[in-house]
Length: 231
Image 1 (cartoon, rainbow, N blue to C red):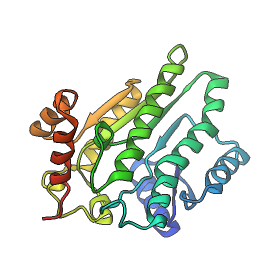
Image 2 (spheres, rainbow, N blue to C red):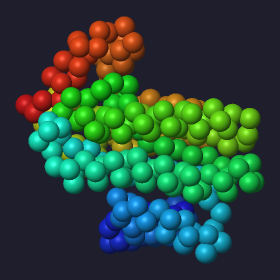
Image 3 (cartoon, helix red, strand yellow):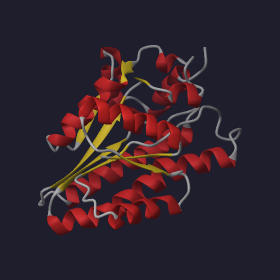
């Protein structure tokens, strides 16, 4: 198992926990994925050590709350670099190895945000729409192979995401699901080769999602805007 994140200390702590709990060998690669060159460096390091990647899990991402015109250029460009550029780059780097041997699975973490535009999180919602459309398109391109691409779309989940994005006091995060249950749904869906997996939604949220195609866009935008306001 290879784990990648910016903080080497946190990675080493996770490595120790995983190796103790699951008796697996874990390799740590500390890289800042908001930097363009990081993905190529990760791929080169993996190849240099002769490691064959069977499952690629693109889980890194972050959001940010606020009106588009008030958020800084640096914040939103970093979000695009991580949520879109890094995911696309890692997929593009590792996928040719999968196609050469005609095996492998990819799990890209999108969001239920990908179903709609997101006032007060305009860039984040747009990045997740990109992930969903990219994942689905590649899935179809590979439909006659033994390679699958699964797109996980979680709802509000108990992680550091909401706090980091300034969303922990918004209506959107009133009801959350455990990160473990969402991760299990995604992993099981990937193993089954599912194209899309939706996880972590209350009954009312499921109704809202299912009704999106039939909801006038202006009404939908006002609903999402209201949900994302800080209480």
